[in-house]
Length: 277
Image (cartoon, rainbow, N blue to C red):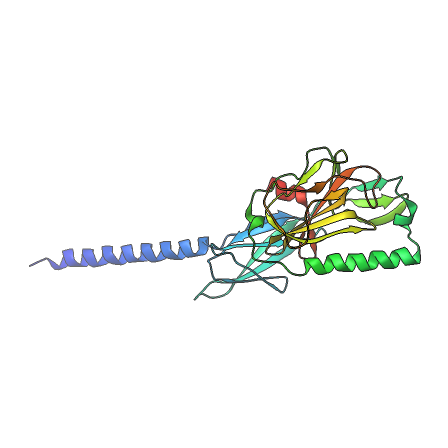
């Protein structure tokens, strides 16, 4: 007959082992919801959740990849915290709060810009308004592509001549904050897709000249402005590194360069931060 004390020790050991396994399972489950604790203004934020979760940020339900990745953007002027609500399959809702770090935004003075692009006459202003609405519509929807998960590459080599978020003054007239990153390069320099995606807009516009928009999926998009040549059309899919056009100085530009902007739907984000991610 096995002594009672020995039986009790086995019961205790089994109970302790069960508690350790339960605690480990709970910790592993928590670990599947992962977001950075702190991000800067203008960041692209990628998180990890259990596949099949419902995820909401800024009143928008985020798509979740088959392996549990989600993404959203933090605006230039965002402050406080970014709240993300996650409801894993069969589990209760939880809210993750991500601190938003402020940044300094220097003033950039841009002189020598064509005057009609700074203070356009009424008929030109009307055209600009129509074109900006068309671009906004192209950003309203996005597909399930996962190009946003790639390590982004620079579309062209060259010196960064304008940074995201800096306040612009054109010919002495205050303008809006710079919405992307300018890269100085010679006219005709090939422009490469920084990540895979689908072309959702391609046209020659008054302010931005040759303009191409690529949807990288889940709301993340790139825009390429002032192109002298566009090699792609709406509906085409492109792979990372594929040539989509050539650098130019079309639209409101003082010289040849590529303006590369990025967005999460209508929220503008900083391409340089995406490169450094």
